Length: 288
Picture 1 (tube, rainbow, N blue to C red):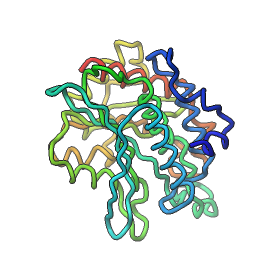
Picture 2 (tube, rainbow, N blue to C red):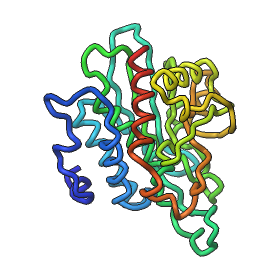
Picture 3 (cartoon, helix red, strand yellow):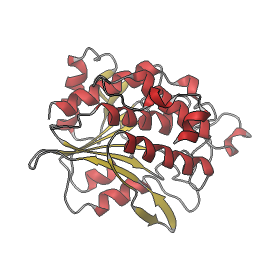
Picture 4 (spheres, rainbow, N blue to C red):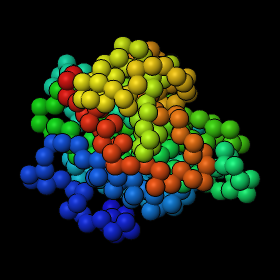
């Protein structure tokens, strides 16, 4: 963890919880987590940056008092490194999984420049933004008498479908298929850092669960960001949970012109966007 913090010039005291730390989501802290990931470089599976990011996530979660597991998995002959962190509640409380993927794509195959299509995607919005919000939620979610049992799931191998030997949503598929007990809800955060944030309803998501979250956003004054209209149907990390008939929602801004290009860089995301999504998800969890 120390190496990760030094790389981006962030002091330990800026990210670790303090005795008097307020239980309020801080978009600037979330943005610092995005900076930390980007400082490692593209988090393509098997790379050093991928390994460093995994260690960074696990270290931050442990520092915030979460029980961290890193279950070993394999799919299509590829090792898959998911990270799960749980904060239990009282017996009978609802169980919620909040998830995001931390890997980035091997090739920027949507880049308008054919030369750049052979380079990895930097992954500021597509990967780092969701992880950043989850890590800040790890700091602010209640440690004592929480309303719900929360599992934070950091999925590996989501973003390399269409590349020889790989498929989409590999990490979340392993987690969903391994569940002996089913959670009450799964909420996925993906591409939620866009400085021009507009989150439409994703069509395959559970409508009741989506209605709750979008109503929470409207109550907080973010109805212009969480737009209560369906727009896209997307295969994402919520898909394997829906296949098991678990209510799941994909919170995603797919109107992002830098998707799978070399321009998915830190300057394209904002602390304000991370703040909005973090506030909405936190408020929704606390109402369970």
